[in-house]
Length: 131
Image 1 (cartoon, rainbow, N blue to C red):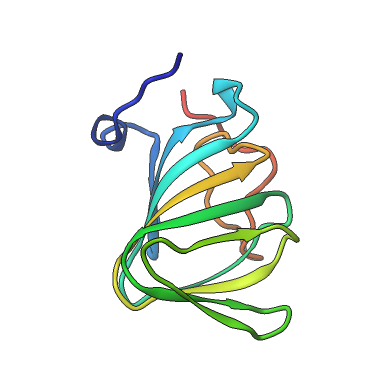
Image 2 (image 1 turned 30 degrees about the vertical axis):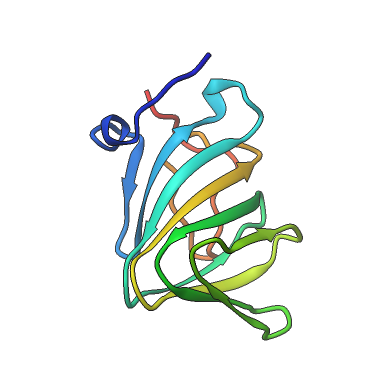
């Protein structure tokens, strides 16, 4: 059984911080679950272009308001508490946060821990693991 506390994990290398977001990775590849699980905060007023070429992602909005725009077809969907979206086709997208968004995210295949977006908006398939 794996038991972790979010506040304790935030004080470790499991918390990754960038200009637009921070993510605390509660489950990683090294945990052997076949997926990773993160609590991610998207900072208010930011816009982040992403294209997870190597991963599938499912996201559940815990709090905050924003929108996701598909760069494939131009559709825009509001993100509010209780909304879930799944990037099941490696969808190119833009996530905009009108207020701070708190999100629960699942990645398959799992992340190693220290990934940040590359120039295309993707996470590398293999990256440095949290030690």
